[in-house]
Image 1: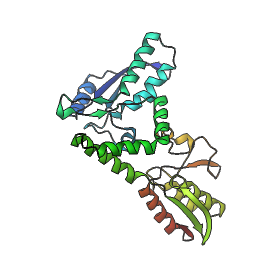
Image 2: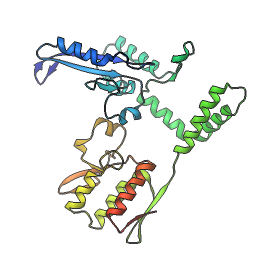
Image 3: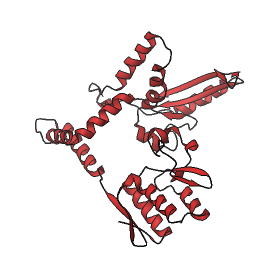
Length: 292
């Protein structure tokens, strides 16, 4: 591979785990083996590939394998950053057909009943077009889908394992759906009402800015806040691929805060727990600030 005008030999060592966990300290053994054989100027990239979800991958602070020199990726990552972009390149029709068929196979529900300990119902990855279509289908047909799940969970003709699995899914969906909205007051005056959790950070920063409450000290406080696991303020040039891909910041709009000629965007990754953490922290820092 040509890197910065210099030719380099690249080795990619992949440990692929599907339906199994690491055993016998494999990744450390492989790492030690290939590092001993490494020649001068050679670059070795160690990859740990598993079919975990995108959200689980985002939450990782280190790879799940024993050797922490590996990069942990999932099949969705391969689809988003390698396979689908490859289809837009000047490749042969044979290669394009192989990639297209592989993409289809990754999106198929895989059910293995033959070996009980490996029984699974797993979709490895989805193409972007398919993901959008399915997300839109869910948005338009939530009630119908929920009703269908309830019918299956309460149908005595279904096996117990199926009914239990569907009941668990229904309970999780019901618990996670949160339509809470908030009002923000400053000095007992209503500033904004009916805001969604995703906008609570942005609306708070806007209130502080419009009321002249952002100075060097409070600006540092805002920059250091990570109530939602991501920095509250971040520059566009500092975004990671993950933050852009999963819309952790509203990157398709103008900067939401400009301070000392620096342009920042405000985090949008707010769930119930980190929203409550944010409210407690900011209410304490700014006494006039109140949320309902």
